[in-house]
Length: 316
Image (cartoon, rainbow, N blue to C red; front, side, top):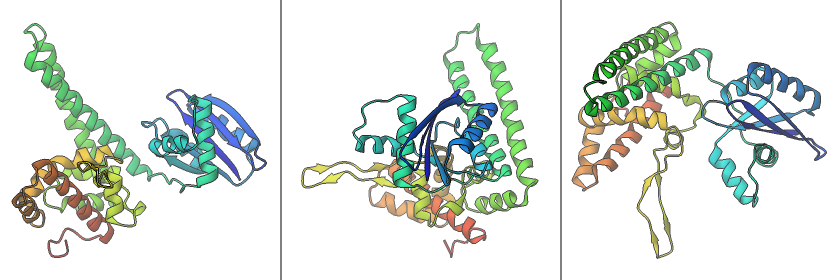
């Protein structure tokens, strides 16, 4: 087996391959379409089958090269950077450069053999891109609106014009998302299932469908962990009794998307309304209640998508 580690940067890729004999080969290439083709040719020349490839998730810069390698027939694992960092600590790692990062990932692939990554279908990736563009536009609009509150009179017309442009772009992207979903029956069915849950609107349902592949998860608990909505408990012996908090190791985009729907679900969802009331009666802080509601929503999302049936309070 040839284990390959790739350290991904915005413009470059550092590659380290460990051959079955234990010998290593290194390469660097551009993180471009041409560079990805060069990498595939290099692997075909130097890799001894089977070839397993690992690379860290790095803010989206890894997506194109991971897809190119997958399309070329290679087994690719997209790894959580926290996992690789912890593995490096366990190996008493001292140096940190792009080549040593690639070598560390290659060693992790050789010793740990993580699960292979499967890309989302093209239509889902396109929906995901639209959802992330919407998120960026809304963030920019919030920034400009905050500036307007304290801006000098001389610059307010410029900020107001920018806000109007952003509002127009938000409307256009939301329309694009809806049209895109309506053109693909699978996406349309998934959106309608998620939107059947009281508290979740059309935009949130579209974001969830674009960001989430429930087939990857064996249970709703696994999905909640992926979303970062599981408690992180710090207790040891008799002296350490840390306050619990959300793990937040997972998809921040899904947590962000579910925050306001959780507030709405706490008022109108027939299952979650009494659940929230019980937590308040027990004296739980409001943010603890919101986090619990978000996790319950994740369980309901998992239920409707796995069963293929709309939300049913009796079943929920």
